[in-house]
Length: 301
Image 1: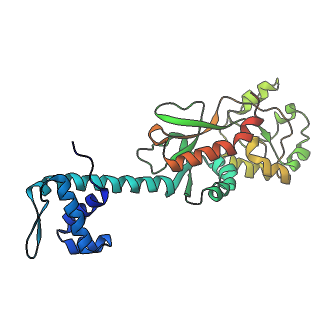
Image 2 (image 1 turned 90 degrees about the vertical axis):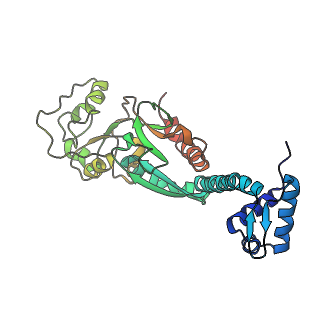
Image 3 (image 1 turned 30 degrees about the horizontal axis):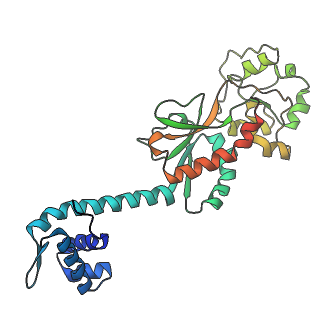
């Protein structure tokens, strides 16, 4: 078996095959026609047979050249495709699907730090309350931030933070309703009186909470909306304190009791296992896992 001929000669051969014209191939490659002829001659010497039939006004492939041309064309197309895909993976747009609260309260305020470190990666963030059920095969997203107790199937998952919960409210609400102990919350107005976190949190406090039988007049499907209603003094809500540090700092919301509940639900960064080595996903994964580390370290083990 002979060694691989010079890649420069193979590249010239591929161009001449496409154009069937030495002059046009030379123009495409930025070479002189003489240089193109020289590279073809080198390749013919290596192969041991003519690759082209040179006629007065045209060039045709020889029998040997015709056998070689499809494989060379396929090889160059594979290289072009691979380099194009690699460029997309490294420098292309990173599409992220996220649950609304994580996107609004953590990702959006912090994504600029990622872009400072990785300006070659543009970012598109979309939100959905159905992000837990993202279909990577049908939806145009590279990664997703979901809520789950564990990541199953052919996916890679990285825990970002626990979805711990505690009652949050406005300072005015505390004053208006005389909130001093957890028991004071039993009869206090609730933004979402059927929230599944209410019963276990009160039980943790040694109290029994019975949700009202009637359906709630309004259903808010994200902590973002619950926080807005809570800040307006409409009631208190069970929310994840880690998302509202800015609201605590400004006095918009308060967490009157330090006790937090946790039912095993966490926020995870997930993506298909087949994408685990995509450069743009690797740099985002490393950044977000590192950036959310303080949130995980603050949680009790």
